[in-house]
Amino acid sequence: MKRFYPYLKNKFILAFAILSIYTLFLDENDLFTMISNANKLRQLEAKKIELNEELKDVRSTLNKLTSIHEVERFAREKKYFKKDDEDLFVIFTEGEK
Image (tube, rainbow, N blue to C red; front, side):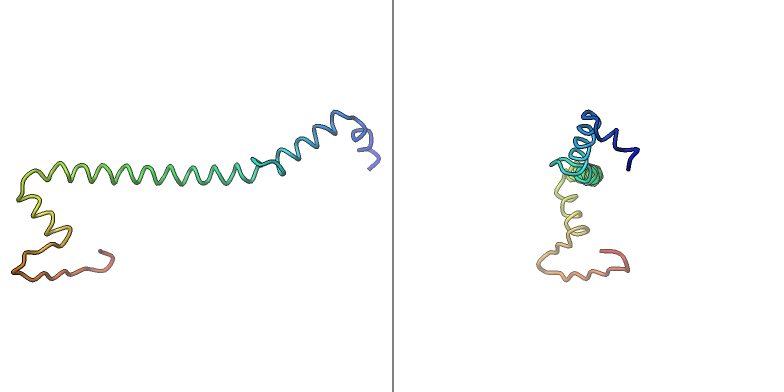
């Protein structure tokens, strides 16, 4: 402890130490908050990429649906619509929905 005593008497080093502790641990934007925000940002960017890919798929599907026959085919295959006078049987394999 005796070898740290001269450094503790120096007001600049003491002020720097107190300011560093406050900034890293006690401030509103402390080190842990910054790390948490960086993780959230990475997750949101990954979700943004997924949603952009899904948006491209939906737009391409929408562009393909130009005639009534294509709309009817899409509704039957993807949305399982049926006419009034027919029955519909849907068979799922494992891992498919």
